[in-house]
Image (cartoon, rainbow, N blue to C red; front, side, top):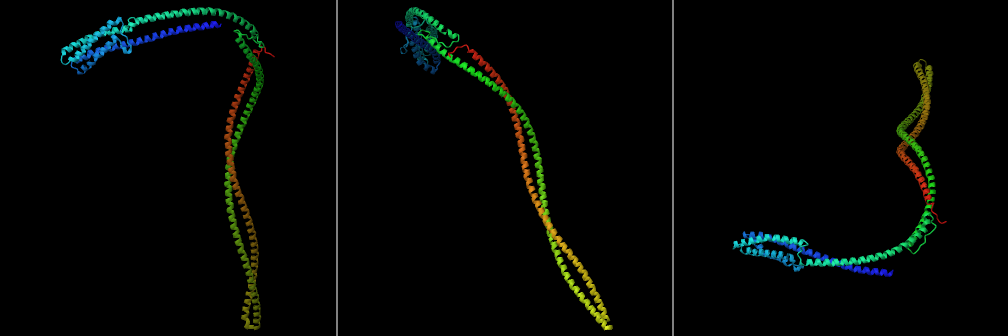
Length: 545
């Protein structure tokens, strides 16, 4: 085995060397051919420039003869330019290693050089004589024109010869092509012969080795098939024998695969059982969840109706609260007016009390004055009594006096009557004064009672005023509370409307959840069926206990 391997390496080295030589020759030939292409381009460029300059020489010489000073000056360097291009065509270019033409184009190059020489000589004649000897200059122009036109076909032929392989201008091309073709042909033939011999030998050796390897492989494969036949029946308890032949790696891979398959089948069986159990429990839970969702949906519908009723009641309560707030405001205004009326009544009662007290004082003064009048009446009565006594005494004296005292008796009688009338008047006045005093006393007592009643009434009215003030304050506070309650009721109405919308959304969500839960129940049922199918699919595999 090692000798064969060494021979193969030696043969590969030899073939490698031959291949390197062949490639070297090929690359050298390729580079040389590219260099020849560069030479072709240089010759074509020289031929093109020579044609252009020669035609320019015809034009400029004709203009110079006509007296064009500028054209005449340009002719001085044009001859040298033509000579340079002609030399490149005839002899090559040492600066760029450009070789001269071959024998097949040597005559063409000579003709071109001769015509260029004639054109250059003519240019000198024109430059020299275009002012002094016009006839000589015109003859030179004629020569330039003839040779300039005649050189164009030669340059065209040269260009075609350069671009045509069969008429290549270089003298070395034929020999190089012949030599290169011969060397490359022989090298290729030798390489093919050696390669063919090596391939034949290698093929025979490989056929023998392949036949032996095939027999060994066939036996190993048969043994492997015997070992894995139990695997085809699903028996994963056995392992394949690992040998040193071609099936050794396969057997090892099969054992690894069987081990992984054993673990996979065990995992699948366990997982399928767990999935089956979990699916059953999940199905029960999903059914329970679906029933719960149905109950929730009914409760939500009932709650939505209740919330709608609450919203309606809250709205009514809000309307009632607004009415109550209006009534409370009106009550507050009425209480305020009542309080003002009470305050006015209190002021009136105070005025009445003051007037009664003033009247009582006057009546008291009247009683006191009547008492003084009584005292005066007593004096008057005493005076009347004394006057009466005096009148009696006077009458008695007059009677005693007789006729002389008759006139005095008349006066005494008159005085006595006056005294009696004064006594009667005094008695009447005394009676009137006593009546006035009694009435005055009763009036004073009545005034004092009225004053007490007025004071009591004023106190009661003041208390009523305080109560009305409290009612006014309470009514204002009640109106504020009712207004706030109305605002809260309105906000509660808005929130209740929002709750209604939320309940509608919850109802939709619950309905959707119920449908999805039923779909989940269906999917779980399918999953349970798949787990059973999966468990049945691996039931045919036999695992170690």
